Amino acid sequence: MSSTSKQEYMDQAEEAILHTYQRFPVVLDRGEGVYLYDTDGKKYLDFAAGIAVCGLGYHYPGFDEALKAQTEKLLHVSNLFYHVPAVHAAQKLKKVSGMDRVFFTNSGTEAIEGAIKLARKYAYLKDGKNDHEIIAMNHSFHGRSMGALSVTGNEKYQKPFRPMIGGVVFADFNDLDSVKAKINEKTCAIIMETIQGEGGIYPASETFLKDVRKLCDAHDILLILDEIQCGMGRTGAMFCWQNYGVKPDIMTVAKALGGGVPVGAFLCTEKAAAMGAGDHGTTYGGNPFVCAAADKVLDIFEQDHILEHVREVGAYLDARLEELSAQYDCITAHRGMGLMQGLELNIAPQTVINRALQQGLILISAGTNVLRFVPPLIITNDHVDEMIEKLKRCFSANLG
Ligand SMILES: *Cc1c(COP(=O)(O)O)cnc(C)c1O
Image (cartoon, rainbow, N blue to C red; front, top):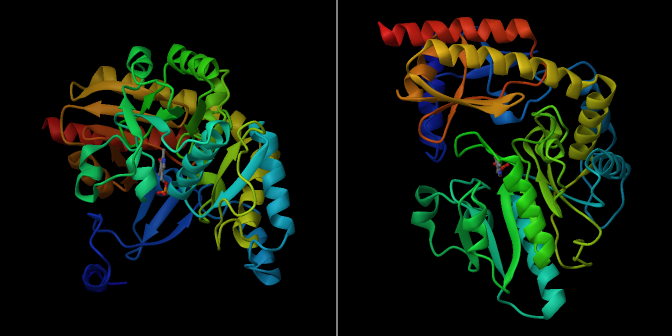
């Protein structure tokens, strides 16, 4: 395909699609393994995975076949009926999380909406009041719909869309005193990402998460952990909180759950399962097609020992990025766990990302000054080396 037609596609997209993204000048066409190809046939090593979605990369053995088999049976039925793929996917999610109940959604933001509603209902059942507060974290990200945006501690994302939903207060992540200061008799839940993703790859400290759990237990407050980005094996545990030895009352999952098929979920313990018939719903959520995808993803995780692989290659990525940060002055910090890593820079991440694209490497940023590494979970040490070599060329160019 010629470059003129690529430009034409880009122009047509800008004319037809609401301009809410500053897109890279690349028209992606197909994927294979951990590589993407654009319409000019240029090959890219993918260290973004569709923003932590394509955990199994592209065309993982057996995945396409499972999707195809389900399309030939049934794509959709309403939630007024039972169907087998939802049963299988829900049972497997329960097993890997140790949670008791699952509600399937179409996206991460909808999983957050459900989690917020569940926390409000739990508190309402206790005291019959309608004044309950949720404590959320500064620099968090939970999604773009109004409820999720209301618990997203980012002035830029909220400002044009106010008023937000009521009853949300913000505390500082990894600062227990700041959380304590916001607790009162109205507090029904504390919501946080186990690793802040969009905010710049900040993992919760072990003491903070454990202390917040104790605080929640002492005051009968529900702990909601957002695992949408850091969950599904990315840190070497199925869910990141499993690394800490704490358990949430409600958790959210999405992104990598469907291996590229849009499916999310919120899960809760029996204690927090405060919703009954009529309290919540979704037309598409958890339909047979998306549940077949989630079911297959969870099968592959187990059969092919994806978590063990992530622990190995994640340690290697961590070591190589640590080595890199010692070599370049433009890298001011290195944070992360497993295959969710970030390099904080004192130069614009965009400059590096654009150079990386030219080198055939896809990277994304987080926050204002962080280069984010969220590759498919199936990358190998060789892919890490390939990425590091390309990245070095981007930094060298910058240093002249
Ligand atoms: C991406 C993300 C969301 C929102 O998910 P969508 O599917 O884009 O609605 C929520 N929380 C976290 C931590 C995320 O990374």
